Image 1: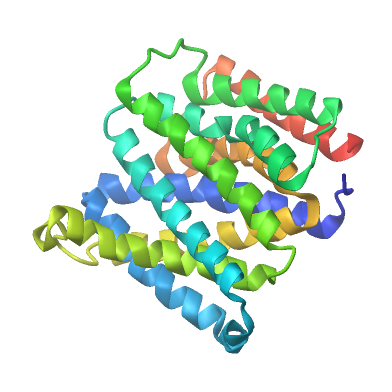
Image 2: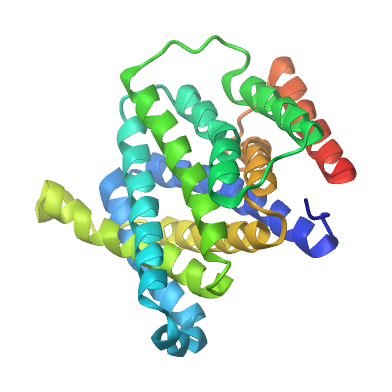
Amino acid sequence: MKKINKTTLVYLLGVSLFYGLLIVVQKMGLNFGLDPLSFSFSRSIIIIFISLLFFSSQLKNLKFIKKYELRDLVILGIVSAAAILILFLGQNITAAVNAGFLIRLTPLFVLPFAYFLLKEKASKNSIFFMFIMLFGAFLLVTNGALIIPYLGDLLIILVALIIAFQNVFAKKIMQSVSTDIIIFFRVCLSALFIVMFIPFLLGYESISALFDGLFYVVLTAILYFLSVICQYRAIKLVGPFITTTFFLSGSLFSALFAYILLGEILSFVQWIGAAGILLGGYLLIKKI
């Protein structure tokens, strides 16, 4: 397993930082009164624009992509869009704390996918440190409360499974396709599918007040885009397991920004959870 150097650490921290802030800004947008579907639809349009602008110099390389590579990239985009839409459905029929914790089961599903698709096996130390971070995330997100199963919980677990496959599959594609091209397809295609799917499924009348709360729409689009860039460049450097495990620390940044921007205060149990995430992350960096 590759060592974590400073560049990789920046990307890993970037995933947690940008995604953690993204969760809080999305909540601020919903508190502002944005309709969730319109919010997702509008954000996806901005993401497409950002992707085309950022990767404009890379687009000329698309003509060199082989048919089987294009097939895999399209699959990646479809899978990503499915995860976003299923997550939306799951969040609407389960408790917020359930969704917040269950989505962080992703590293557990990465292990079998990485073994079968990449022939990679995580070390025992890495798995142990992952469980320390996972337990910390449980305490931080749920405040130590027992989770009562909801129907939506199965959908959230399915999303964690899809994200795990998505990250491992992206690493497999990186064997022949540049990371930037993969990021472009992952971000742009998934956003395009969402823009097409929401009106098709629910009708154009479901997209009400398009681009209301433009500040939140643009900011969440930028944060999402940056988090994906950091995520996939980290996957390229250290693989999907370490990258996805660091995703657990996103709950720590979410708690920090929730305190700063929303005034939410952590309990003693949640502070223990935060300490567990920091300890697990530190050990993971030092020992692999």
